[in-house]
Amino acid sequence: MPFKRDPSRQTVGERATSWLIQRPRRLRATATLREMVAETRLDARQFIYPLFAVSGQGRCEEIEALPGQCRRSPDLLVREAEEAWREGVRAVLIFGAPDSKDPEGREAANPAGSAQVAVRELKRALPELVVMTDVCLCAYTTHGHCGIVDENGAILNDPTLEVLADAAVSHAEAGADVVAPSDMMDGRVGAIRRALDGVGLTDTAIMAYSAKYASAFYGPFREAVDSAPQFGDRRSHQMAISNRREALREARLDAEEGADIVMVKPALSYLDIIADVRAALDRPVAAYNVSGEYAMVKATAARGWVDEKAVTLEILTSIARAGADLILTYHARDAARWLREQ
Ligand code: PBG
Image 1 (spheres, rainbow, N blue to C red):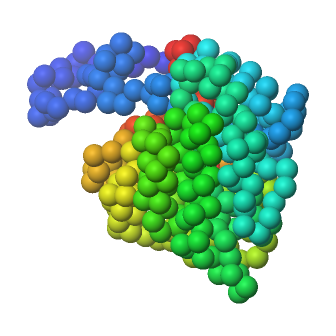
Image 2: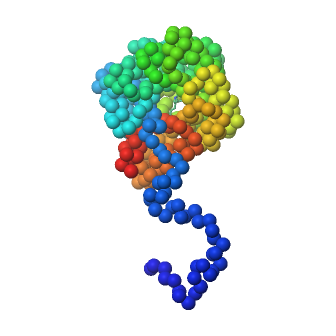
Image 3: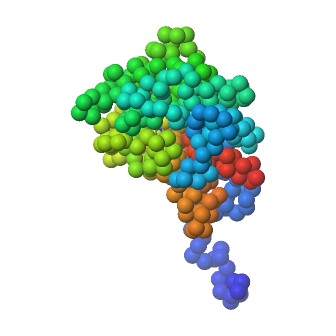
């Protein structure tokens, strides 16, 4: 029943609401006005699409805990990146899943490894595509740790830096535009910068996983590259979820060591950290909308409990609103398509 004004009663102007001067609803009255005053605009050019590389040809293995995502051989990675590019996605992040592992993760720096081959093929097919690579040892070590370990299972920080730097150089030599160390060893950004410059790759940029938390939201990813630690956990190097100030220290150190982009990871439970880093640093800030965040949306949407498009765009907008300039997300293709449709 529509509301009907009682003519015997006072008009609005005579009533007690004359004090009501501020009416934020005025700017929400029409869709056009709402769009005009939007403070945050998502754009597919902000997205970085993570992709998993395996060796071979014609291989596309679905990752159960990441519905819609696959491990792909270079030929199919190129096809996926081409489709993403057509939809407006401008950057990918390559994770290598190796054929063999060893205790020191040496395969991470193999010029013929799955990530390096994928990078070469991607740059050949799509020279304008920004190709980034994840630099870490956890997918390459038999024990699943992000570094070289001693006989007690403790990670050896400084010897690990050398292997990470070798891996980064092999990615850059394959043509990567940006290398992204995700290991959280102290000094890795400086070590990688020095190693790149040492072979003349001064233009390869570094995106540092600066504030990377020891999060339970990485579960599905570890299935994707079989990188779950065989003993212990990652709390000796990844940040404690309780800490906020420490994130600024990590981000500042990485910037001083030469990081061109600093990253916060995960994104959704760490919006406060994104806002802090944005306010404190003059580098572009990236945020990683990680595997567990993606899997939660996919699982609930599959049951019809949430509207996948609406919650995804809400999550990505929130991450951008918090201050992220760039967003790494498995939703990149879908979101780019939805933004175009709007
Ligand atoms: C490698 C790495 C991880 C992720 C990105 N790089 C896993 C981990 O630290 O265990 C997680 C990405 C995701 O969950 O989507 N160190």
